[in-house]
Amino acid sequence: MVERKAFPLRIAKDVFDAMQRWADDDIRSVNAQIEFVLREALNRRGRLKSKSDEETDNGA
Image 1 (cartoon, rainbow, N blue to C red):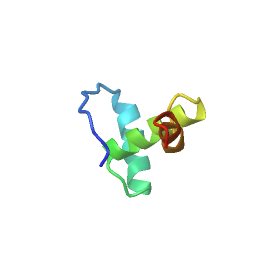
Image 2: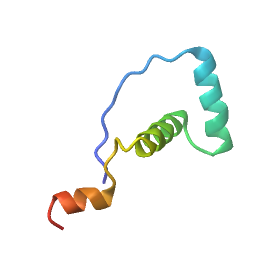
Image 3: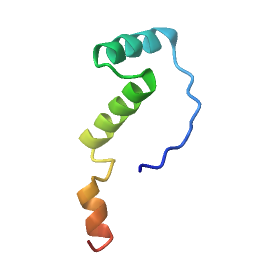
């Protein structure tokens, strides 16, 4: 299971409302939608290791 870390987030109402609509469209919670968008952006920028990268680092 993936380890989760709780993190308080202050967000502008218009941004939250847009995320809520998008989450509703994708049948996700706002929290899951924010994590999805962050993960997607991190992957595009090469800032998030993929599972295969982690396995290589661990000698798998």
